[in-house]
Image (cartoon, rainbow over all chains, first blue to last red; front, side):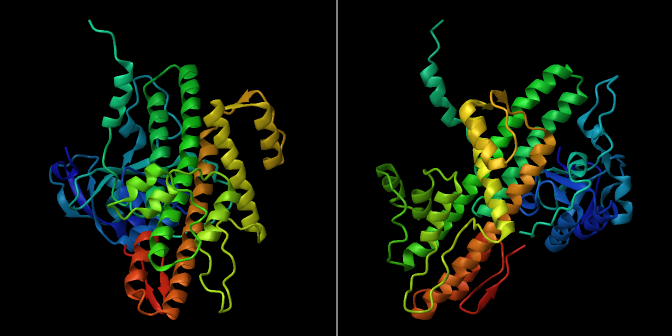
Length: 144
Length: 286
């Protein structure tokens, strides 16, 4: 079932950029499954690299509502409201009963698609990259 | 029951394909998206192995093998990118130059046959070769992007991977190591042979123990991906700027030979950077 057929909201990519930046400059991100963004940001990417591309593309996204609210029928939301729709990565991947939570369990994850396109993709925090690049200076890679 | 026709079954692999993804006609977009797919696929399997409660020792062993494969894929993604860059250069310059810049490319009979009826001279010349050492890559691009004029002050020779200044030398040295790491995994299934160890020691300037198996970690691959991303972005920009410079010179000598607006637009679409051809500047589309 596509995102359009589930409870969802409209989200301008510029608002998503703002939310990404609020998660902190040292947080790294991974785009999983979108060829458009995937070709334009490094992978994984820094918050500022991702935010710059999201602002430049300036398109509208559809974001699936984690809470599955029946009245979520494509109303626009802003950066301030994204926290209410975001998943934990452990919820997306599914933990077997009794499994201890892995280190990436609380990585935030959004289920997204571009408005007018059917293919769903994920934007997720990347704790492996965040840890790998924690105490080092990594120069930003120019936008494509 | 009939015996299995393994020969036929191997041939059936060729029937299992899917279309090229959007953006595949731009080398740098194609490169970036593929690199991301490789790491995402590995991360997905790794998370699933953890979340589903698999046997830790088995998961560690299998993921180790998958990380080896991911290492190779990341390096070969860079190799393909470099070939696609070169193919773009050929396609841009072949119609408007008549010198010996393409002599460095050997064209097989099958490549000649494949070229007829299409506009893929660049791919025909570049696809089949091996582009896995900095010297041969530099030699090819130096010839490919050489200055067609000798009467005007000449352009400096072009090096895709220069050895100066120090920051570029560091990239060159690391890239040589990357090619050798790929060799170790591809040709020896990850075993560091005696000869591999000698080469890796020289290239890395660290102690490398032979007759051990290379088992890259997730963090190793994060850094490798970052390195090849940085390398591809920088080389893409430099090739685009060099092509723009050559087209500008060619246009100055013969204004009827190229349309600067059309060529600038072509370069920005392919290379995704801003270029200026004969005074015409274009920005890449979003």
